[in-house]
Amino acid sequence: MKLYLKKSTIKDTRFFSFIKVKSITIKIDTGNSKISINMKAKKSKLNTCIPIKAEGEIKLEILDNTNIIYTANIKPEIGMHIRKINTPGFKGELYFEILGENSFTYLENMKLQEKGYSTIEDISREENVGNDGFMRRIDYTGNVYYAHNRILQTFRKIETIGNDPVDVIEGWEKRIDNNGKTFYIDHYNRTTHRSYPWSVVGMSIIQERNNSIVQNLHEKMGIPSYTLNKYKISVARKFMIQSSAYKILHYRYNNGSIRIKFVDEIGEDYGGIFREFFYLASKEIAKDKRMVVKEGIVDVNYEYLRNRKYIKPNQYMNTDDVNTLLQMSKTIDDIDPSSTLYNVATFYSDDKNAGTNMLDDRSFFQYVGAFLGLVIAFNQNIAVQFSLSFYENLLKTPKYDLRKIQDPQMQKNLLCLYKSTDNEEIEDMSPQEYVNYTCKEYLYIIKREAYEVIKKGFNNYVGDEFLADISCYELNYMLFGRPSIPINSLLSSVRLVNCSTEDKEVQFLYNILKRKNTKFLKKFFMFVRGTGTFPNNPIGADSMQMYFEKTNADSKMFTATTCIYRLYFSNYESEEEMERYLDLSVLNTEGFHHA
Image 1 (cartoon, rainbow, N blue to C red):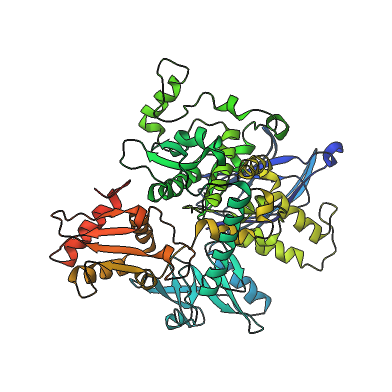
Image 2: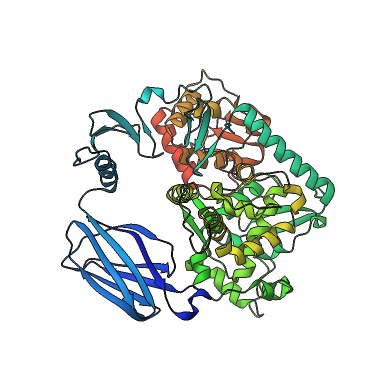
């Protein structure tokens, strides 16, 4: 059973309501669960659908802060329930509809009733699920279709998948519009494109744009590619941000080339370990309490900011970063227990703190901006996808419009409102003005304090002028790379050393990799190259190459040298044996892998 709250409004009728919009809370108690919904007391309508299991009457409360302004009971009976509110200071209507069917069936029945057709019991039924992730279903008209569990797409025929003249990677889909023109859907970012960025031409354009930005940065900012001056950063794997923050925030290009060293591990370099640091640190950024991950997309956690007294922009713009960071160690291995830094030493020693940091909000967001600036400056990649609005904020002239909203349902509702021919004003604005304002509020205003600090940190390393002609989509592709890669394309970039495709071990390895999913391939890529990012280079480019070398070592474990993209393997009796050691090596080893 589902409770559908739709077209509901509550308006603040008090004298000073035009000065400040009041926030109110709707509490719904079903007996099994309690749900709270926050909304603003204005003309905008609230629509939401809530799964419920009601025991007895559903209790409804509306609160202004902690003051109860309205209460009601609703019987859990299928159908529409209307509650009108007319209390001192507030006026409105709540429309509750209790559904006994799933939401898709309900919406389909609404359309059928509008057209005068009879309703249905269920929109479709499942027949079977295959090992390939496809589920065979039959809709209420008797037609068969297929749904893919992982990429959440539906198809009339499985045979049509993969017959695309362009090699569309997992998570992307090619379609043709009503005018016969081709367009592509990026299901990872919930966006559509007229051209396919992962074609040979598309990747070449992205790579050319990326190289141009990096080259301009190096020429105008004096960025060192490789110098005798080394700027060493000692990093603890469990404390990526905390152990690198001081050095990252105080790095200047004239300090020399950055060298990363993981504490208690062999190796210090500008290659594989360097790539590994940026890849892993981006994951730790995404897991911080001040960030939020929704359906694989990372952004600032504005709920955290809203519920906390945040430092306003005019309070931090002129302060010295050093004063904030004096309580932190310059490097992880430079801690004097007798000094004021002792609290940092105890922080590192507690495993419960792994993956967290002691940075205040402002320092953390400045670190995020500085970190991403260095990712671009040194042509590296990250492991996570930030939102389009997050990337838009880093550009010279950001535009916060409907295309940047990655919530499909919200975008669809706002687009419908934008195209509305209804001239009724919403909060003294036309529908188009209201949509534009809502986009800016949702994408930027509610996250402005954090966004401004991030941009300040970013601009310390990458100025506005360097990103003047780039879009947020291209910036995402430059930083994140390709979300997936066809295994045959990946294997075509392999160069064999001391072996050939005729060797049984090579055949074993290729068969094993062809069975693995994208998640494992990213880990394998990281094991060999130091980063799990698939570069946005055309297949066959030098930066895509890996070397598989057969050795006569006694050990069955796989090893790798990430600096030169080389994997080492030995002799194996069977494919099962080889896969067991490959899994053990890739999934349980980190750091400088070559013994």
